Every structure is written in C-alpha cells, then in structure tokens.
Length: 189
Ligand code: GLN
Image (tube, rainbow, N blue to C red; front, top):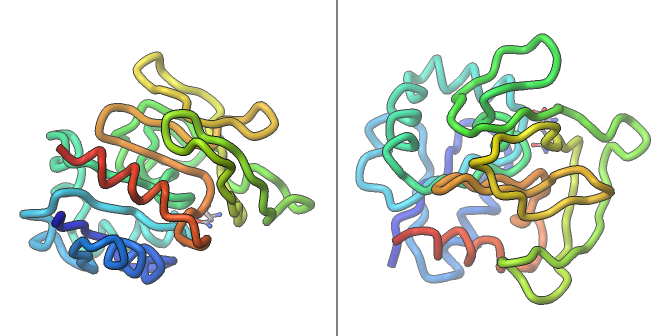
C-alpha cells in the first residue's frame, strides 16, 4: 500500500482521493508542508493555477514541495497541476514550482474548444482508448530533450514525463478509467 498525497488547497482533489482509495492505497489531503514528509507520491490537481500557486506561497508549502520533487518524489500534475510544475508559462506570467523542463500555454484551446472530451491510446500507459476530459486546459508548447512526450492531440503535447514528474492536460480523475492513476502509482519504486 502506497501513501499518496493530493494537494487540497483548491480544485478537483476529491476525485483523485476517491480513485487512489479505490485502488487500495492511502490518500492524504495535503494542506501544509509538514504533511509532505513520508509520502510515496503526490498529485497536484486541476483547478486555477494562479490561485493554487498563491496558496502554495501563503501556506509555505512551495519550498518543501520543490525540494521533495527535486529529490525524486513522484509527482503528477493534472491540468492546473501541469502549469504549476512547468519551468515556463507562455506569455508574461511567472512560473510557479519550475521543476519540469516544459513551457505551457494556459487556456490553450481558446473559447470555442474551452472544454471537450476526446479519446486516445497513450503509448506505454494504456493499450486501449481512454477518455480524456479537457477543461480550459493548457498544452505544452516547448520541451527540453530530457522530457518524454506521452501523448499529443491535434499535434499538441498533452501528456509528458520527465523522470519522476508526470503531467497531463486532461483530467483522468473525472472519468471511470483508472489506468493513469495505476500508471502513476507504478512510477513509485
Ligand atoms: N485554466 C486553468 C488554469 O489556467 C486550468 C484548468 C483546469 O485545471 N481544469 O489554471
């Protein structure tokens, strides 16, 4: 049984907690830096990245979190979580945790495709088509060679991994499919 933290300052953390538990693991809502010790992995959920970034500062979680991730703690960022992990944000905005060598574009699908659902086979993660829910989602516009691209939709990178860091533009926690959660848990040695 693994101990998985889910950052619970704002956003879609409850859904991740339910899935982790349903897979037989311990899920902990993270609201302070002390809780970051003794975790096997942590999920940064979707929500509003500017708000979560500010709360990470206010609650003094940021420094410890960056430290843990830099020292190999497996982390998975979904949607806003992806934005938080990126070294760069397209435009004039300061990045947050700056631990993954990607540049992301926020709200990248504009208004017409603001939110949509598609399916795809993510090589190395799932052998069958899985549903992908995009909600005012970002995508990756630039990567360093250290980053592995896991999936693209219409030519844009929407899932990637750099060693212990996994990111998805979409929300597997809002579907019935648990394959991405299983993949993340398997990243834990
Ligand atoms: N648009 C949000 C942001 O930029 C992310 C949306 C999401 O997490 N569903 O922070």
